[in-house]
Image (cartoon, rainbow, N blue to C red; front, side):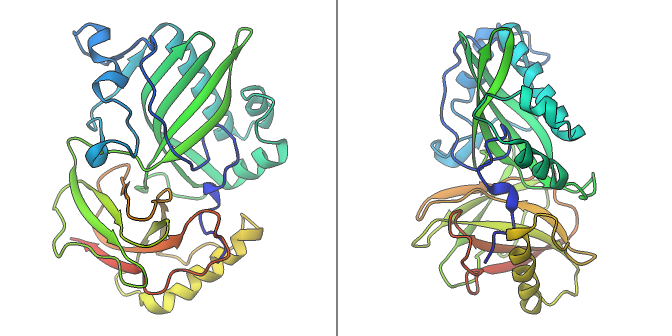
Amino acid sequence: MARIWIASRNLRTGAVSFTFVLVVGACGSGAHRAGSNEPRAAVSSTTEFQGTPTLTIPGLVAPPRSYKPVFTGAAAEVERAFRARLDAFERKDVAAAIVSQSSTGASRAELLGFMNTYRIRLYRINAIAVNGNTASIEYENAIVGRNLKANVITTLLGQRETWIKHGERWQSVSDVSSSPGLPSDLASVTMTLRDHAPILLPARLPKTDFGFLVKNTGAAAKGLFILGIPADLNVASFLPVIEAIGTERQTNTAASEFPDGVLEMGATADIPAHKDGTMVFSGRLPKGRYLLVSRSAEGARDQPLPAKEYTDFTIN
């Protein structure tokens, strides 16, 4: 099947592709926690929470929800350039986006196609590390459709970008994505992805904000996506609708939308076989019914939705 989540393509736009986050050192980042009285060196975001967000930490732990570092010096310059690039995407300013990236970045047509279809929601910046004329930014964001309502809770991605300084200007070079870590103050619910069988969830879900630790027990890499659905929706009969929309989007990113009452809420990055990933949300899931569906790994776009690999749950 054509990939439903077109935003997961590697477009090299400096905030939109899905690959893996790498661990980097502090490198004189000049970051400190907002409101903290501790010395900056003691609260560097890449030393206190080493390597987040990443798939290499036991338990996939990320900073708590309240963690909001403040950047100074060269790191603050990088932050301003990064936020200006995001603003260009929001305003559909292709010229500004091109200036903010290196010569190996996305083409004008790729940028415009993305801007017309998707919006980037920055959740938070976890770390900025600067080493001479090279910098890395670790952050969490959501990539959503332009027509998505502003108050919809979505999944988050862990992102890491590399920037370089040309003259007086910082420019985006590349970006990679992964499952974000689960915030250390967030309840964790284990979800199990299996081959040719329903997704497994616990019988009871927490009555508070939570995220999913996703265990892929299958023989191949896979991801999953989540939809908000009406309470009376027949899931089995709705799956062909998902297939059809995915096929349309393979060739036209402005293809059909889901029916009224169905909300697209995002997807995970690919989770390797027999490895763990996460599904973390931008806020507490509101009351309602939700559908989780497995998808084939990136690069296997012509594959149909894996048979039987879905489940629904309700937040009361």
